[in-house]
View 1 (cartoon, rainbow, N blue to C red):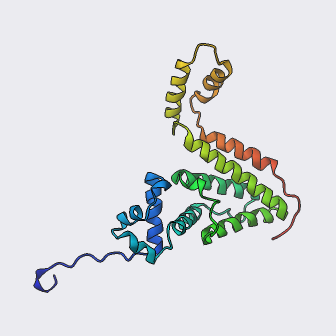
View 2: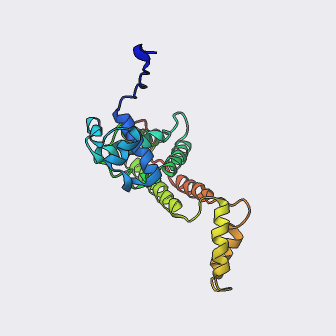
View 3: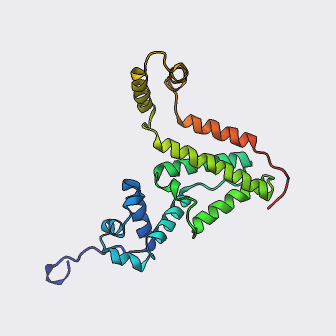
Length: 225
């Protein structure tokens, strides 16, 4: 014990850009990106809002860092595998990351100052397509198509009024009970013969669509990047 019997206060972890970005991601995960004020980010760090400006330039800089952090969570296309397997692995990982951070999908391609994780991610995806025999234009087409489907599916998925099979059963069951009998036969058929069948998982729709897209894409030349 220090002289005089006084205990020393525990050392505070130094503030850093990484800690600021991590705190911002946590705030956005819990409350949405609209809640991202400097004060809201500073509070869990135990500092004043002005202290953040020693490590970030402002809110836009924080958003840049947050997007880069999410890209850093996405698995890069595995090397040594065929391009379809590589694209599938990366897309599944990206969907999982975007579900963990629902605010991110609206920001992923909006930043004008991408960070190293973002640039490395994009470079790796293009590289995997090029190694698979895609020309530069076809790699661009494939990348855009896959991500358009990926982002669109996640946006739809996050908007659904259920997050599990049990939730789907409850919501769809209530809709069916409230609908006039035989008024919407095709909708009723799809619900009862497909969506409400035991073992149905809405996530399987993502797998179906992704497989359809990957099967439709074909490299147009055999080349090495």
